[in-house]
Length: 112
Length: 113
Image (tube, rainbow over all chains, first blue to last red; front, side, top):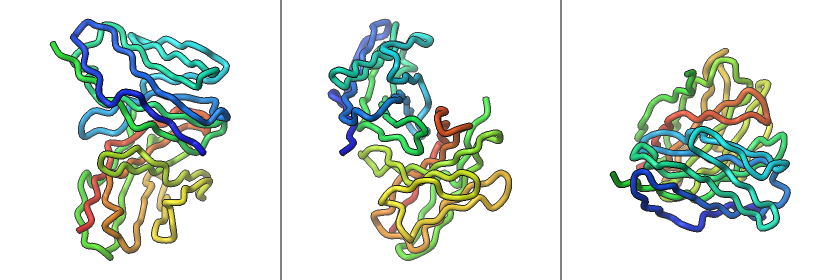
């Protein structure tokens, strides 16, 4: 069956550190992966996505890495800031997708 | 930046009552979705909607649920006879196309008593 899971439920870092949030997926048919950020009282906010024909994609202060061999996805946040504190979800989908399968979420806590 | 808006932000209802959750998707988007998140659990897909019909639904989306686009701007989720287990945060989302990123609203917290 499909499943997307996160290894660490809570990650605590100091301001300025780099953060790495991990995600494992089990559906090898998935070819589109997305990271969302959810702040308290808000809906999921798109951060970055990657398709299965890529291994790495960079955005502003964020990088997503995809390892299809071990079905692993990671989100790297450079120079983490207190405003980055939130719950981060990975999600997977198929091309032409109609539904996203979300992981359980990792809470990122950034201390000043 | 355009955003998906949802109303109300909180809805309290009695078990067995009907509720309608409302959403205004981003104006040039063509695909609309409902997801829900029970407290402490994953965000779960409910239904997708395109061209005035349901294109995909999950096993959660049973006969008690329905969706509608009553006019050119609103997208609604109706639960006919609410159950205690329907208590959750309901998120509306929209996208320009089937392979485009989803933009989510802030959600409606539904509490069934």
